[in-house]
Length: 115
Image 1: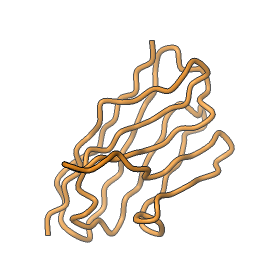
Image 2 (image 1 turned 60 degrees about the vertical axis):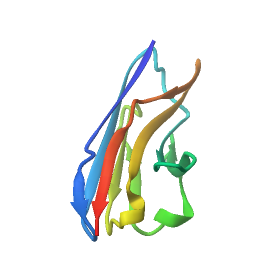
Image 3 (image 1 turned 135 degrees about the vertical axis):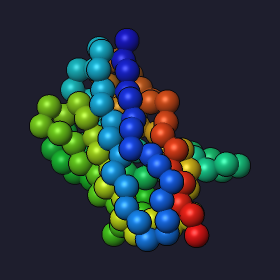
Image 4 (image 1 turned 90 degrees about the horizontal axis):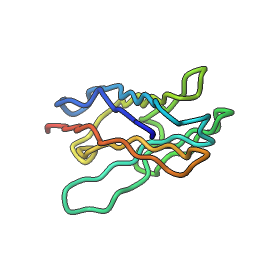
């Protein structure tokens, strides 16, 4: 069984910064891909960022230049540094891992940006 535990979500003002963390445990192997997705109320889940085992990143258009995703040396944790936060970044942020046994999702962490 795989466990992905996110942390770091908070209430922050426009222009502020947050750093999200996601730690994987259990039968995780070395995920080829880990990433962050987010879902705002009434909207579909959307890509925020993904990182491969070799550090190749991919970002959603709305966060390019403001967010930075990275993985740890063991490749079983992923982080998301969020700068220049905007009210439209308000959402539940979910951690994702493409494990050798299939996809895994965390429970999510709430990020709220006040105007």
